[in-house]
Figure 1 (tube, helix red, strand yellow):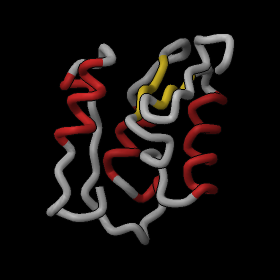
Figure 2: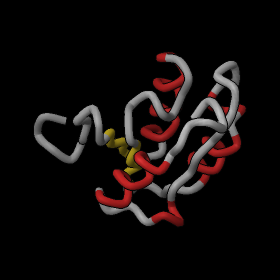
Figure 3: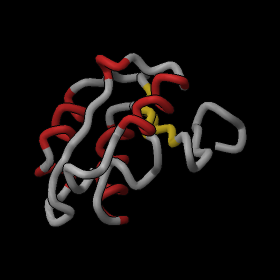
Figure 4: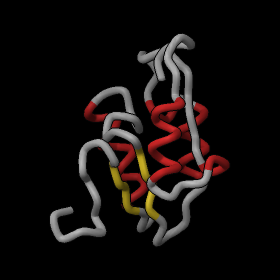
Amino acid sequence: MSTLSQDAQLQLDALVAAGAQKRDAFADVTSGSRTALERPGIKKLLEYPETGDTVVVWRVDRPGRSLIDVLNTVNLLRERGIQVRSLSDGIDPATSAG
């Protein structure tokens, strides 16, 4: 989220409905000018999963503030054998359509 006025509850509800535990959710409220690696929530997210895990995001733009930022974050995870699934965008590497 970019501002304090935004509410993450919709995103959290969707993640929980997809099987995530609330304790495993990471969030940031920060300026859009910060890269993903400068955001505390992304730092925690990158440290948390293990090889074989799947990181589930509400939308594909959540792990970064720009296309390059998102791609860098996803690449960091995939290099460690961690998949990324996006609920809103239908991106799921566990399916044949991916």
